Length: 204
Image (cartoon, rainbow, N blue to C red; front, side):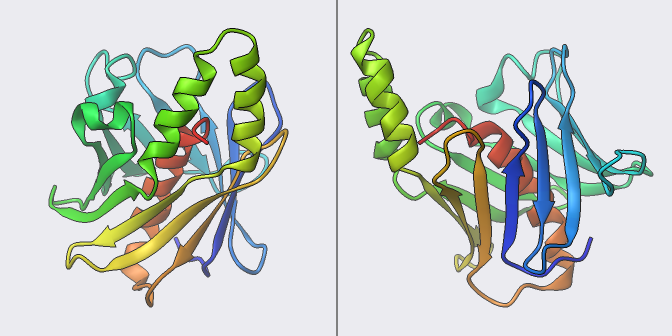
């Protein structure tokens, strides 16, 4: 999987969850489709708009992984079942702020993903809890305030930043590189952040 950063991730306005990933030149990198009516989180990644050529699959491990979302590990595999790595949620911390690790195919942590402003999610939850008025205010909050996430490599250096862009009917994110990207990182980072965006799209 080759791509030129920054990447754009945009949800298609649809009854079903569908995400398009394009690179800096506008080239289509992936079309992501979330599987419905499953007790486990599962998405399929395609190389084309017609969704005829599946390249990867991402699936939460464990029978009830979709319900126990706060501790699930999501395995990333190529179409031939070879492993790319996994996204590991960092326990109950993810209930109020994004906290994940991207693991390589050997299970070792290669990147850590953190919400830069976790207090925004707490504030939004407090506002949304107010009956009626809170719902309206939360919608405005959702439009005006958008979170960012920093991806740190194993050496502790910031490597990527994910930004949620302001939008009304769609959800748009960009992934920017903060240092030169090594070719072997692109596949794991792109697919891992796709899964993060799928989970975090309603925050902020």
